[in-house]
Amino acid sequence: MNISIKKLTKTYGKKTSLTDLSFQLEEHKIYGLLGRNGAGKTTLMHIIAGHILPTTGTVKLNNENPFNNRKLLENICLINETDNFPTTLKVKEVLKTASLFYPNWCARTSQSLLKEFKLDETVKVKALSKGMVSSLGIIIGLASRAAITIFDEPYIGLDAAMRARFYEILLEEYEAHPRTIILSTHLIDEVSNLFEEVLILQEGELVLQMTTDELKERSMMIHGKSEDVRTFTQGKNVLSEKEFMGQLTAVLYGENYNFADAKRLGLSVEQVHIQDLMIHLTSNKGGVVA
Ligand SMILES: Nc1ncnc2c1ncn2[C@@H]1O[C@H](COP(=O)(O)OP(=O)(O)OP(=O)(O)O)[C@@H](O)[C@H]1O
Image 1 (cartoon, rainbow, N blue to C red):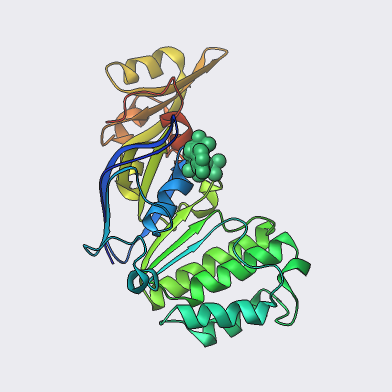
Image 2 (cartoon, rainbow, N blue to C red):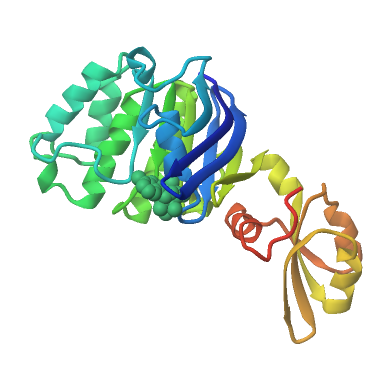
């Protein structure tokens, strides 16, 4: 299912959460929705999932408005970081309810993930640990097989090993049953190899939408003698510089850089991690987002 957002703005009283967003998401892709605290990610995901209305502008999923659209909502699953389930229900009751709502529900996936995450079906949600609640959310998100599956920081309380397993299972499920997945996370480096495309929000505005491959090609981190680095960076878009004892490290963004050129000058060259790029691009000192 494709997603088309046009001139979308969301305000709460005097507070503007999203400003004039326009972009398209294709079906069968994994998107990373990134941005600092308060950038507007959760608000945007709730609008896409049809939970809230934009103040102005439109959101269309396969040309239909999701708000109050029961038929469409059966194909969208949004898993929040918390408060997903009624606390008085047992795990199996939560899963039963979800299975009735999502027409593509896969009971086999649900059962195998219950075992994987060692979740006891007979326990009430209020007795689950934070990590177990996250596991339950992940099970529902994956078993729903919803055409649009959105995870908003779904890993609270999960340890590193469990998170790694979640990413593996997400990829396996996606490969077996492609769908549009939007994943919002602050642990970017853990998952950036999953993203096919990245969107970065800053203070409610979309500052970048790009494939991860292109993002990597258009950025580089170089290190070496300050004067050599400066020779290389002259006229280029420098996102950040750090100097220490005559050595300079600079992050560049904007062109398809040729790593060999920098190496010829004796500079060491590395690819910039997406997490670092996001931080530089959304810092007030950041360079121009080309
Ligand atoms: N119901 C609301 N009423 C008033 N302001 C809101 C409401 N929901 C969100 N906001 C404001 O909108 C802005 C964007 O919030 P949002 O939760 O969408 O950001 P976020 O990128 O998901 O942040 P985080 O990474 O911290 O979860 C924030 O300034 C927030 O205070």
